[in-house]
Length: 305
Ligand SMILES: NC(=O)c1ccc[n+]([C@@H]2O[C@H](COP(=O)([O-])OP(=O)(O)OC[C@H]3O[C@@H](n4cnc5c(N)ncnc54)[C@H](OP(=O)(O)O)[C@@H]3O)[C@@H](O)[C@H]2O)c1
Image (cartoon, rainbow, N blue to C red; front, top):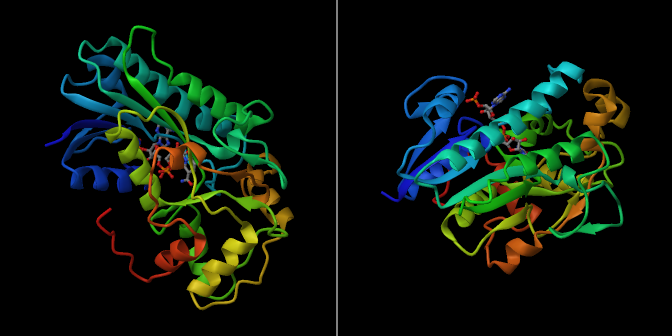
């Protein structure tokens, strides 16, 4: 056994892939969740009892799904989006600060929405951002919530994730059937960048950050090959042997999601994983062709990662 990992949001799309990967590598997982279940603790139990002494790492992936089309972009929903990320991160940070036996590492997630959408800029982990709209400020507060007290000698990593591609959740879950029935296509003009990463690679980045004690600070959780939304649609359509021409007009996205939230799909940033590559992380799916070919399979068998 490699030790216990406390995994906030371990029941979600990325959390499930990461939990499976960590278990395969011999870790014992305790999921922090709003729902009871085996090997779970609630957020209240976390605040009351803290983290166990044997804990090797703490990871947070909790957060209300921003792109839930059933939820209108109201002040109440925005508050939920905010508090489900900032509060849970703060509660884990406080639990680490209070623990007598500290974990080795605290890893949190944030988003590439930190960087301002642009068709010309190229962003690495050192680029400025985090101060221009709701989503970028959310990322700043999310990352700040993870800061530990000065006395805590715990390594910290934040993974600024791009759009995670996997069959069990996120964007592909919404796109698979439209593409399957031949009505898939780009969003708007399709020229906006789509910073993406395969779910197996983002899970492997978390494991990499956990196991390599030299890794700290911000990592851009994106694939090394950036593509536009149109290039993604073409690659996914070709991988599924389907047409990829039918665009989803921008006004429809803005109508369903609201302009501020719709920007996640209608605008994009060219983000590169400079520090990730400098640390020597190797991707299974570095390019959109290999990723979409894997995602287009009717049954995706989780490879040993
Ligand atoms: N998927 C992506 O493309 C992507 C991209 C960039 C960043 N991220 C971030 O990565 C994290 C994980 O993403 P994901 O796609 O795995 O998300 P997900 O499938 O929606 O799962 C997130 C988990 O958060 C918990 N949660 C949901 N609403 C909550 C609330 N109101 N209060 C407390 N906990 C709540 C849920 O766990 P319980 O029901 O067990 O409590 C859920 O399993 C999120 O914070 C997301 O913003 C994701």
